[in-house]
Image (cartoon, rainbow, N blue to C red; front, side, top):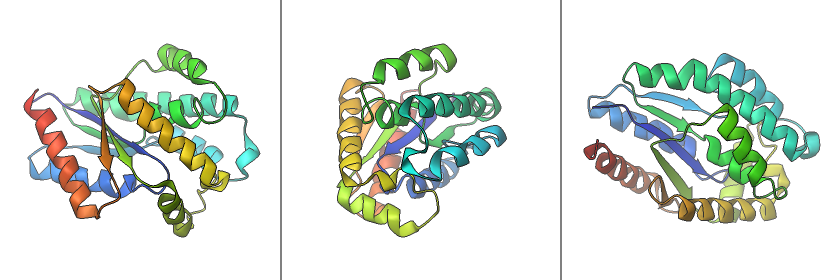
Amino acid sequence: MSPLFISLEGIDGSGKSTQTQRLVEWLQTQGRDPVRTREPGGSAGAEEIRRLLVEGDPDRWSAETEILLFTAARRDHLERTIRPALAAGRDVVTDRFADSTRVYQGATRGDLRGLVDRIHAAAIDVEPDLTLILDMDPELALSRGLARDSGEDRFEDFGLPFQQKLRAGFRELASEAPERCVLVDASTDPDTISGTLSQIVAERLSRR
């Protein structure tokens, strides 16, 4: 079978990292050889840029600067990790991709979606085959995210109104691209969520 490029998206604290790992493990049980990765990050250069983006004061960067930094990290990620894996016939499962930039910078911090799309088209021009959007109550997700105390909580520090805008942005994105994006209820227990995700991916694989 041809490889599948899958992204998991959603607001901070919605369980993307946990479900990315579980999905990778499920794909392995199907005899596949997936690559687990993340954004910002996923390659040596992109991980260096990650620290600039997820640590420090919320007002450290303007939204426009963030778009450029995220795109630079994504380009390195694409060149060093994603394309080589797909070329080798391996599935790629990433915790975030370009949709996060469309929502975080393009829809919640000013009307910058057009700028995001133009830069994406020029520098990346790749979309996942399947995007799983984990949807849940922003207040609960924010409490989870802050409880991690990971030191990478710059976006959580924007507060609840920001997370509410993010949720609305991801929901709108799901309606814009229904063939690629699937909205998944992430308010249930992790086992139920992972079961739902594996069913969605199994159905998508059956089409290939």
